[in-house]
Image 1: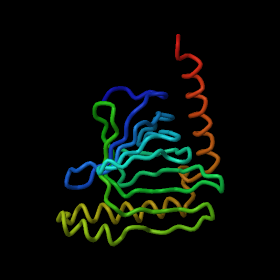
Image 2: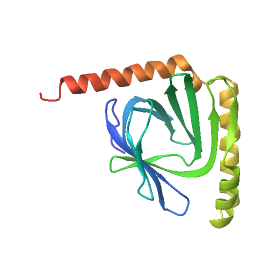
Image 3: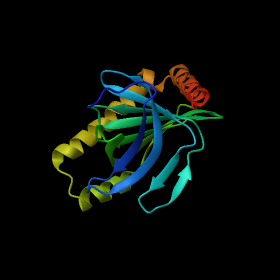
Image 4: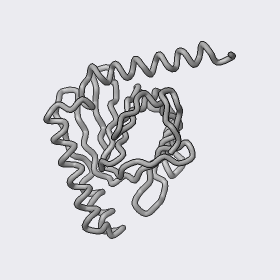
Length: 184
């Protein structure tokens, strides 16, 4: 893997277990590189589903992709506060300027109020039968969900509003700098 630097831009591609593309995010900017994860930011980026339906995200997002964890976390900076959309997913890889991972349906949604809810259990059960997930994969998925809930309850820094607003400020500064130096 090439050196990943703050300010680098990547696409994000999400697959399903059978190898089919699920979604593609046009752009994410590297904001921080840690030993076990990378932090990205974007705002009003184009998202395209496999069926060809596209839209732009409504609010800024700070995204955490982990090298060895079975989840990723998206902090959505909304007017009413930060919502977190956490995907239970394979650890990411980077190929040809694209962050890639497999989505395993289960999601953890954390609301600005602090309440949370596990989403898409029926979709997960359907896909695990349809695609015949092996036992070790099902264990990794369930453990990923439990670990994510535990991280949230324990106040992990990825769920810290001040940190996510700081990352958003970093994102805005990077974009501003890029626009100011576009013609140089």
